[in-house]
Image (cartoon, one colour):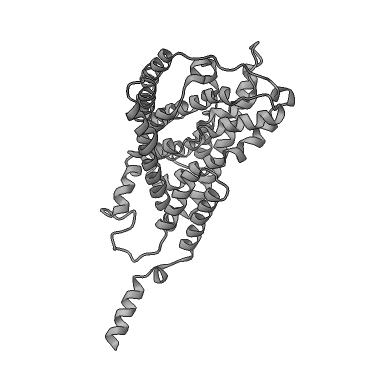
Length: 378
């Protein structure tokens, strides 16, 4: 009888109930919240559902030493997490993004690339704020990249500069990407007048196939020579786009833009979520990162809109400031926000194709900004 009781007591010690603390329950509730937002509100479900389930998975209380946790060397979850920790997943996602992206709007209106560049002020603004709040320069750089509205870039840079903060930075970046319509709309309305919102822009011109093929080659050479440290992201982005536009590698482009990016997105979401274990995630520093991440989004959106207003002071062909928000690289969500807010003011004013130019420029800009930060902080 005593042996049975001892066995039951030993079994109890290995259960999640015996090892549970309130912090685990808080994180599990956060994971459920992410899943709910993804399913019910349909806010970036391809990101929030895997991250939410990952948060639950990573916070199941367990007896130490079972070699199943994400931070235990050699465990299955730890091996999958190396794609995040070592920065393997983000370049693969950029390959898929390149294979899905049509740069025609940017090629036809090259001046709009400046809006994408202006929106990167969110990154450097958050970097300076993080320094003021006492973060080390490398940590501040990793936090600042949240303003680029690009989850893979945030993961890539934080894996190099601040691995210990990667969970908070990645979850913050993906959370705010899902909230782009909620965050950007009031800022756009506050910074523009009704007259400015009514500005109509001509449709982008048709771009030839030759231009589409030349662009990724010239774009890569230009950006890589300026910021060689951004090569893993920029190289894969432009290579994916060349696969798409060349016309002779359709199978490769379809694989990169379909099954491959789906698999990598699932793994990156699940493992990033699982890395947010309560003992590492629930801290004042994590809350501060979320606050700075929100500020970086606000600064990026405002910078893009205000930069368009500044350009309009000197140009005869006015640009609708509502496309300024699209300078952040949340493709195509930011461009859709431009379209929605534009049609609210003028139902016949469709800004989506014009907004796609700064939007895809923002993807390039965030990778360049990451390369710049990595070059002097890495």
